[in-house]
Length: 324
Image (cartoon, rainbow, N blue to C red; front, side, top):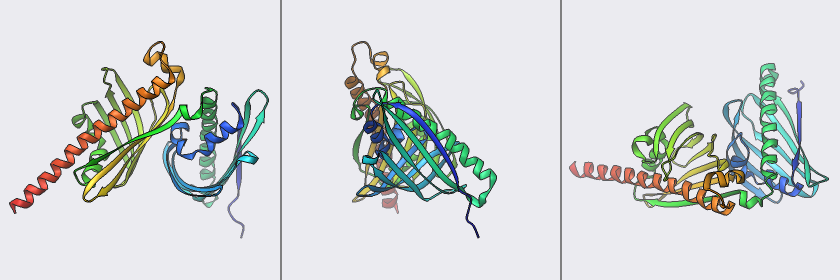
């Protein structure tokens, strides 16, 4: 009995920039949520030599899908091969490769190939997968071009930073505060309005209007992946003008009954918006410092309120126990 029918797709683009720069953008999987529009979150699962494994959550035809992949990195050959270890329906299997070829004038031809099978060979499933690949692949190639053409060192454009806070309260209470973002307008002074939708458990769409320290307002829309009491990851779908991409995580651990929370951000800067946002004479370094201060400040403010919430919960339980 023959197996499912295999299908293939191929997408290509000429990207401004040398192959090693473009290759690094694809190879650095932890940067993907800030670089690639469809990618929401990536968890690295292991690395051995030129092989690595990771789990990815991504927007596919308007839905958040997750799968585990393994890759083989071949920088000398200008190639990255990948294969899904565990796919999510309607995909039965999927793999492919990235190819990078140097062109005259500091340009790179990038080819992205996929091969896949669909669950039960269902024609509707095949069409769904094809639509996803024809939507996401050009978006990813376009993102590579957008970053590469800026001509700035990659580490200055795409970078991460984090703040870790120990909170005298239970992890469950701190997690609840971050998870229940629908209550943030009444709990956080920099949040003016919130709309949260969670049709699939653990997958949230969050629209939020915030107020900056200067009094300006900004509306953001994010997708969040919530793993109970451990991690909340998010991807900002409408980043501020100063950023081409923004993703982040809230990670939670228990330390002797108290919560330790790390707020991590990964951003892709938009150098073209620096003077428009910060004024004439401002540099990319100024913008990096501004973003670090603004996003980190919001996270620390949120964690301070989460700490007050968790401490009050703990005090209430203590009072209740003493009254028994």
